[in-house]
Image (cartoon, rainbow, N blue to C red; front, side, top):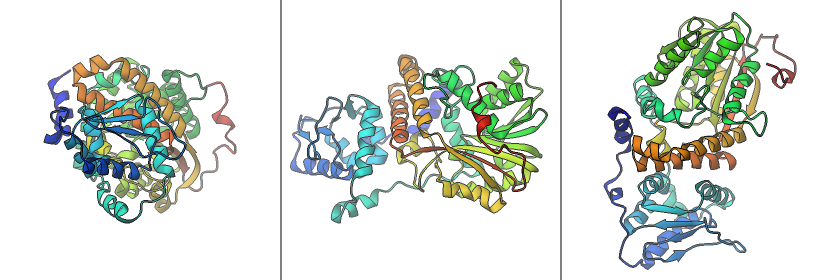
Length: 433
């Protein structure tokens, strides 16, 4: 691991000084401490969760008839940690957990599922509790200007190809939702099925031209070129990913069909039969939906079609504050209504929208399993705090998808006069390639 890769993570971390020493408080907890815990539990909808303070005091606020199991215990090591948590739980929980100030007994995915389930069924807070917590809303994500977008992508994607290679699929290095056409698919099979699913939806034909916005490590572009005989121009602002993609295309003898461009989607030039973007929309921000739409309109031929694959929401909602700050700067999963700012102003026709929410939950479980297998190596690459932070992000994401807090949309669209697309979905599910 290069020192520069570690620095990218460290520079983005900048933990508060209070988080630097996870010692256990030797003082007895007070009535005020207990009241603060009670406030947290009320806000969370009184989940089946027991909070254990530094002096061994156990506090809970159960629903009638509920019971605790071994994995529903959260340990807070000191009073400073509790104060940080009450100041802004959504923002500070991640840092406190990563640094070891908060410890969980049991399964992390299960913990988040308990929290999501409790909050989704809780009635709205009233009176002073509601007034207090209304001041702790998540800040708006950082804007993805041309300059900021490069910094944000650098923070997340350029921390090392070696790191991602440990836990992504080993065929195509796909860091987006896989497609489990069969429930027993391996990660490699499901990711290849996703690539095939996208190609079938787009009805690619040999000799066509495709432009891809945000290509990751370039697996989709190579797959389209190899299996469908199209010519692809793929844009990406991650230097590490572009370098990997170019080398892979050369090694596979596909560099005459695939060109990887290190540039922003706003700078796409040329004219194409097909536009595709897998997992980029979450990074552009709600303010740039119409900008993306204008870009697509400018480069798509009159009989063109396209597909956008993105994490999303059922309704507009800000990204988790800690994930936006530590993991995905500038991230914002849009709702369908916000995505329509891409299509409606340009008079694009929506042909199909599919939600692959549970496919993403399964993808994340596979990633998390491989991530855990390489704990010692990842901690050596970075440090233990990095491992705990990313494990928190992956496990929390599993729960967000299973609880329905996050969605995964694939939107197929075209110019309004395109009349050659299949009349049914039969072509998506045939067994042969």
